[in-house]
Length: 116
Image (cartoon, rainbow, N blue to C red; front, side, top):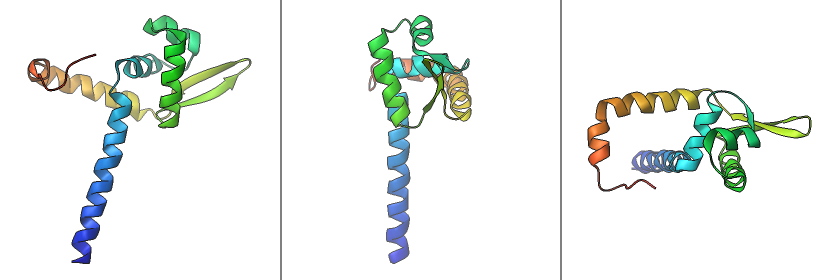
């Protein structure tokens, strides 16, 4: 019985971690920033230029992405350069695009999750 409870607790913890990860990806601005960083490290004004987002919006979402561990930062003189914390994030986004190519019709037709 104890093993069943432990397995359920582990499964619940895994689901919670996955939920938190996907919340990090569940915002159009954060996805735009991550997409820009897939090309390589950038400073805030470069992210603003590539995404079309405002500087305050980029800074706010970068703080979230840093807190969640999806993005890392390095001091570069007087600037802070942001980068993906792990190259597998870019791979995951590529895999998502490949999956969407296969199931896009269903995703586009889904009325449960409306785009922003």
